[in-house]
Amino acid sequence: MVNDRSYRDGIGSEQACRALLDGSGSRWHPEAVRLVLEEVADTRSARVAQVIWTLGPEPATHAARLGDVAPTHFGSVCPGALAQARQAKTGRAATPTEAYDEAYEKPSYTGLHPRLDQLSELLRSQKRFRTAFEQAPIGMLIVDPAGKVHSCNGALETLLGFEDPVAGMAAIDLVCSADRGSALRWVASLRRRPDYVYSCDLRLVHGTSGNIPVHVAGSVVEEDDRSLFYLIHVVDLSERQRMELELRRQAFIDPLTGLLNRRGLLAAGPELIRRNQIQSQVTTGIFIDLDGLKAINDTLGHESGDQAIVDVATVVASAFPSGSLFARLGGDEMYVLTSLPTPDPDALNAALRSSLAEHAARKRRPYKLSASAGTSTYRGVTDSIANLIDRSDQDLYARRRVERDSAKNRSQAGSRDETALRKPAMSSRETTR
Image (cartoon, rainbow, N blue to C red):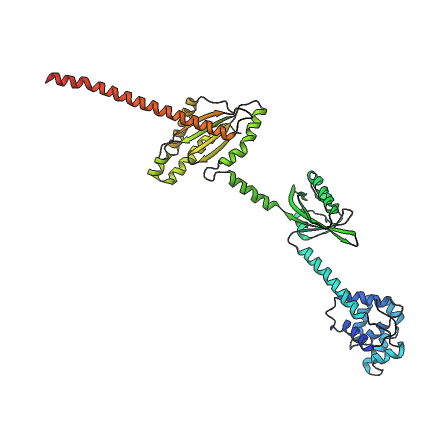
């Protein structure tokens, strides 16, 4: 507050007043100037107004500036100020300081500069905070101790998509109903430790569609052990969640066939087994191995080999009911987890090979498609998907050995028959000789 007591340095007062009005005081915040002038107007005399009005070449401009502050006060306390200013301008009166001294015995205004400096810094600090708050790239929210939204920045307004202003709403109403318990526990943590920054993940209500996953971090702003407000940062997690889903998809999906990979099968399999158990259905695992992939790669190239793998995946995925899980374990190995009862192995292999042959003919592939399958049934809580895969793999190779042995026996039998047919012919030639 400006001091009204005896003043010993009239030049300092004059310079301070001049700086307020002629532009040389630009280092002071305009609002600080206005507040100081209001303080001057509130003093029991308006002597400083007398000085201001008698300075400079544009008294009308000074009058307008001071009139914005307290026109009635200045007009009543200093009715002769404008006249004195005009006298000073025409040179028919003493200098402003002399005219002032004659009337008022040099009152003191030594607090003018420090007060302006203090207010200017405070106002600039407030402006910096407001600018940072409004232009922050993430959502910012100020909530009062009663839980009402005091203000939020543009980023949060855009994120929430409300038609009406968010300010004035209960902050808890911004949180979806399922997450309000978590939000209240988070606020309780903030109150217990005001000096600590707590964070959590929540879903906020969107103004027009669904919920928005966000990460919130907040702290309590205090003064004199009294909570002033909660300052909360809000980060939109929608894009991060989309990226996480995509990464999870890439981690669980085979890029060539679009089927699950081994990791995806091990992750999704337990849920299928649980569902089958609830419905009193068995869970069957079928191991499928493409026949002759190496020959296709060696003769037609790996691009044709990849196409053959995709063909098998397409046929397999269409051969079992919806709800089954299909996976490519690696290379030419695929797996099916289904609720069908364990099929007859011979019938399964015959049907699979027939479907593959028809597909290759329809697509006019330059290779033959064939595959072998082995099966196993889930045995209960002591079993696992990994064990199920191993058992069906062993069954596959056991059946392949049987097929190879059968083919070998048939080949040997055919050779013996051919030899037996040749022997009579040789005997007849020997008889002729």
